[in-house]
Length: 302
Image 1 (cartoon, one colour):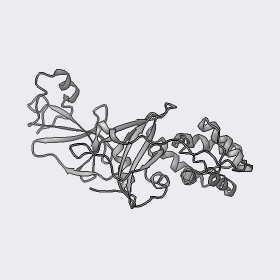
Image 2 (cartoon, one colour):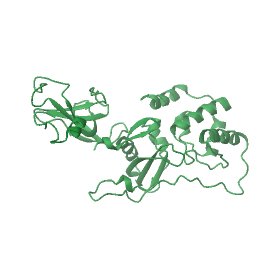
Image 3 (cartoon, helix red, strand yellow):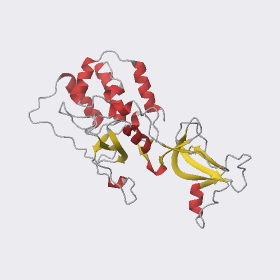
Image 4 (cartoon, one colour):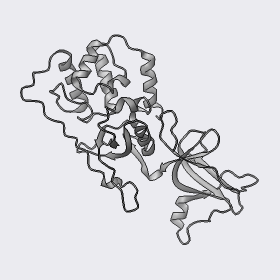
């Protein structure tokens, strides 16, 4: 296992054996540069011609060799390449790293997410022993990313930690702590056995004082973004259904309402209404370069 710059741990599988090739390709069968994540294809003289008696499966998994060379000529015995179903990337030294199965790729709010990358970033935290990530669709129908954790004690809020390592759309909305991750009969993670997250927020205390000042204004902005009323200083933006893109919308409303803005990286650190209101009150001018860099992480796949 390796960890580079806070990215996902990965399994190095080296290179191809003699007379074979490994390709990291995008969805158009174009080769990707070192470090880019794509589909792992193989080819060479030892590759089968297809699945016997299964033309549909053959067409889905095999493709004509688009990269002929002297050792691997088009039209020869190894003229096809095969989609392994694995996700991988190539190191600068040419070695290949396995990053998980393609069927573990998730899609949230139009973004395709590698579960292995998010899980690896979580496991880079010293208090996280194991992590699993799935997509959950709650009653409102908007998919959210959920993280399940086996930890050493109660971990701190992991959102700021992940925000420094992943694009904002890859930061999970909900975190569930488990004593252990469920396994199937083969000893592998059973994602279907992961419990549904509890998305119900605790009601405000009956004797809680009414919101005033910045908190009251901010609660109104939250209500616009989250489509529900907010009445407690302890309310948590993410537990009420917030996620990274809703946080961007909230940031825009804060700028318009208060004439100032909080960098997105800092908003991740103050998910409670009271703490966020205090941050708004304390904030003057912001470092726009820092915010632009953080926004770039969100937009780099658009």
